[in-house]
Image (spheres, helix red, strand yellow):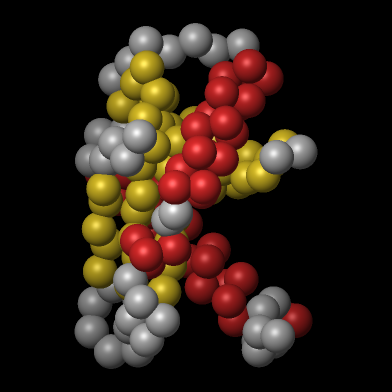
Length: 126
C-alpha cells in the first residue's frame, strides 16, 4: 500500500501526476500538441494523447523516483504495447478522428531525491 501524504493522496499517485505534468510540458516543448490526458475507456487508460504533425501519438508516461526497481522503460511489455495500440484505435473511434498514422511513444521521468528531473522520450515503439 502506498504512503499517504497530506490530503490523503498516495505518494505514488502524486509522483505519477507529477510525471505526467512534466511529460506533457516536454512533449509541447518538442512541438507536439497535447489533445487529451488520462483518457479512459473499458479497456484501459491513455496517459497522453497528442498530435505530431498529422500523426496521432499515444503516449505512455512512466515515472520513477529511483532506478531501484529498474528503468521506467522496463515496465513496457509487448502486452502493454498491444493494449496501447488498441486504446489508440478506441480513442480515434470515439473521437471520430482518422489521422494519417498513429504511433506509440514512451516518456520516462526520473525524479530522484537529489539532482534534476531526467526526462527521456522514445518515439515510435510500434
